[in-house]
Image (cartoon, rainbow over all chains, first blue to last red; front, side, top):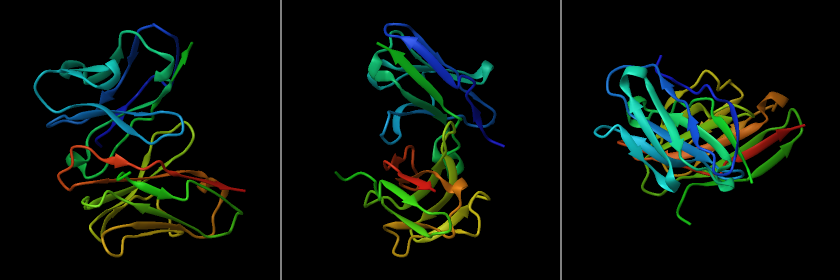
Length: 113
Length: 113
């Protein structure tokens, strides 16, 4: 079955620390992947997406992700987190691939001021 | 605000009661999705519509759950004879058929007491 997995369930960092959240996928063919963010009390928002081309993708708010085919990974990174990055982060393939969303279980990030 | 709108935002109901949620998608979007998110989990797919046709239902959607999109615009999700296990955030999203991304509403939080 097509799916993604996120192994970090809860991450706690201090402000200015570097962030890397893991996402591994387990499907073949054309691989497209998204990262979504859900801030407390808000709806899911698209953070960044990979479709093809440069495997290093830059998103909003200083986030980036690197697609590494050999590792089946699409990890999310940010060099220096802020308290406002406290949120839950979800990795998912886009609906046009599979007609629906398959989400990872999410990673809850707490950034301490 | 022309985003996806969900009502109500919060619903507390007694076990055994019926509840209905409404989702108003972005007007030109022909696809509409329903998801359920419980604590510590990523959004789980429930069902989706293309225009007024319900194209897929998850096995998570028991007989107590029904969703409609009568005119291909807004959608309703009804839960009959609610159980405590139905307590969750119910998310709606909409997209175009050839979607590379979907837009999410803020969700309806259901608490069954």
